[in-house]
Image (tube, rainbow, N blue to C red):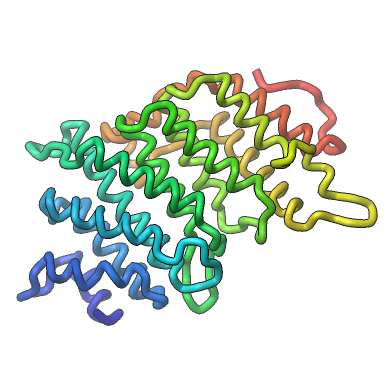
Length: 319
């Protein structure tokens, strides 16, 4: 489908074109999640997401879409600077839509439609998503002439939605936190400048709201972020006559992430969608208290002081 056909579906309030079969049309659209044309790619994402959320697909069709997009997460994995990133990145968002649809069904607010994903299916997609995040090497946010790539952000969104369901136990939630910390702390080819820190924080908070990861693990996790992978302090990347450039980029990425997490813990995190949806049962999740909040705030504050020792005057820690 060309961009004009895609736009006509969007403009028609996502009506299925006359004479077209939904399943065949979806089959035509799914490959376009990897299009290098931003208009095709974004329009396809909007259409498939709308049809999924509007209940246009059967349970079997949603499972098939999930299976197809989960497989796409490994296409070109490990490459950087190539167009394969678009298929990986945008497939993550459609797989997230499928998982979220099942999650909403579990709340009993979809009429007589019940959850349609088996526990083992969710766990399989979790393993695929985690490997896809850990193996992602393309850190580009917006690509001139191509539009949004944003693979780290989109894959973090998927991990966050998987985390907020009831299928992942504490050990699997811990693996999400570990993968995020390792991704941020490793020597970096780029500073993340397209609010990836916010999307990574959202995934982390989805984990924290489950209140299943123990405080001891969380303390160790923050300490891991507070130091370079070799255990040295982040300040060692900056010398008088030399600078570890990749290490310094990682330092900035970690610092931005910890600052963002600190203020989300301090102020809270709203759910997705419009603020008017705040009363929706799906959003009640975001009203949960995070049991480790106080400890995390203090530990993050201490970590930031260590990364910026000449900067701050007050020694007061968060209550």
